[in-house]
Image 1: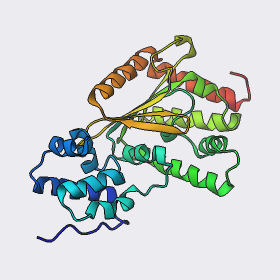
Image 2: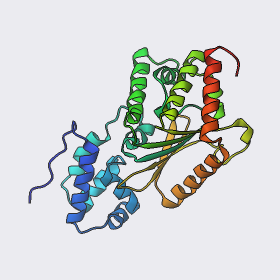
Image 3: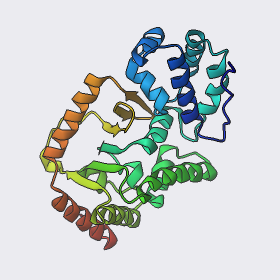
Image 4: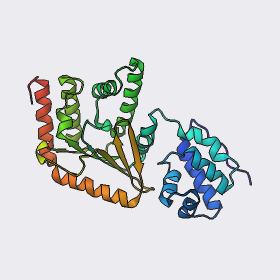
Length: 279
């Protein structure tokens, strides 16, 4: 029987690599859990590789070739599937969110990427690296705008964002940039494209004061959680951890303002910024 062909890097390499992994595993008569034992990972992790929601790292590619006897196929094609325009710590989640059916996110410090305007994203990127070349800032900003085009679809994915009031009051890029950014969020909310709630400063201490989180759901793969901090982040797929963090998000929703009150606050702040008044 002929072996699998090498992947064409120009055609959805992660999806193709995942399909070949599923085929090779089934040919060996192994379940996802059984294959995971050989790699010292969970069965759900194997499922995510097969669904293309996780990038295949070289160490796993090498072990897969050994266990599945695929003559170095996964090692040869791993590099194509791992290519990304995003920084290493964010590449997995940036590419994975495009496959999600639902995204639930808490943002404590800034407007999340999927809701950012170009001017706001540019200001964030410049603050991220004050000495970067202008071409680099533009490249990063364009990458963020490409991600935000997920919301061009009228219904998918579901995006439910809880924004900390502090993120809305931090003048990022100046008052005009903030006015545009908040009007953009309000517009998406009024068109029923996103669910946005504001966690007010008056709510005091809460369960997610340690940082940002993003939960992603998929049709054919287990849920994932992305936890982010300064210039680093990690993806969690442990079911118990995902369940715990989903409960944490639910608590944030319960502490946040209603959608109607959140929209009223966002629009009031946008108007204040536009009129150069102090909120």
